[in-house]
Length: 342
Image 1 (cartoon, rainbow, N blue to C red):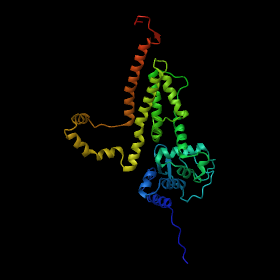
Image 2: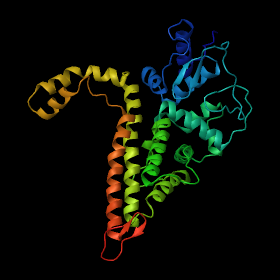
Image 3: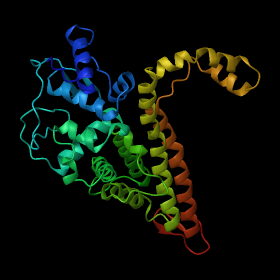
Image 4: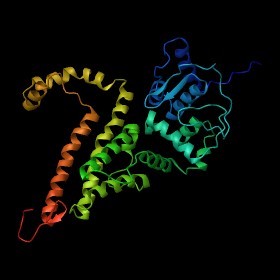
């Protein structure tokens, strides 16, 4: 009787195919390998299966994860071997799944692994199972430390917002302090593009680290004659502005993963459509404005954020001046009765 060989698991087939691309030179050292989203799309598998495939490639020493770059072919590839069954104590730090690295599984290691998945693959790729696969532990092990994915996302958000800190003794005027707060949040969203997708504005996240940013902004607005409701409105609008621009960081990453085109490549494909709009008579101001831009308009989110923050703070300044005038406060002093001079 001839025994039937066991079928190769889907993740293993993916690993073997990507490994062949690496060994035959199709994928060179330092070159990005397919992301979780791309693997799921090309091989028609679940995101958890795609994550397991990338984790196995890391365990076999064929790929490595670089911060803010993604998963690339390892510069020095270790001798390839299939990993043995992982133990519950095999818990690599973010970016390096190393067999035998005996680190106790904890809530912190789970959060760090989840941050790496979300940062490089997007929030859609995150699941309790994908975190377990990245850490090389049993699928149910993370539940001993974090009750659910929703709880995990909150822990991740609190950790991410906690990366931005402020001086203990504030310096500068209200504008400089609000600028610092806005740029601090922007840098956090830059490092963690998925973060802007978490939580509705009308249902704010009650996270200690996020409240640190609120405290900084409100302290900058305090003492300038604004009533409490206006202070809260201004704080929410400024936060909404930063988050609103940052939302497009993750959307661009999703669009690139879905189309396989960079932003510039996609715009090149839109050339005929744009030319038709400009040539028509329906949008004359748009056509004239676009035609007046020398080398074309380059929509850069970092530049747009910095540009838009200026007018926002100009508006805050106008409100502060109006509040001071109503309260009779000038340069920290009170106007004399019936007078408006020094």
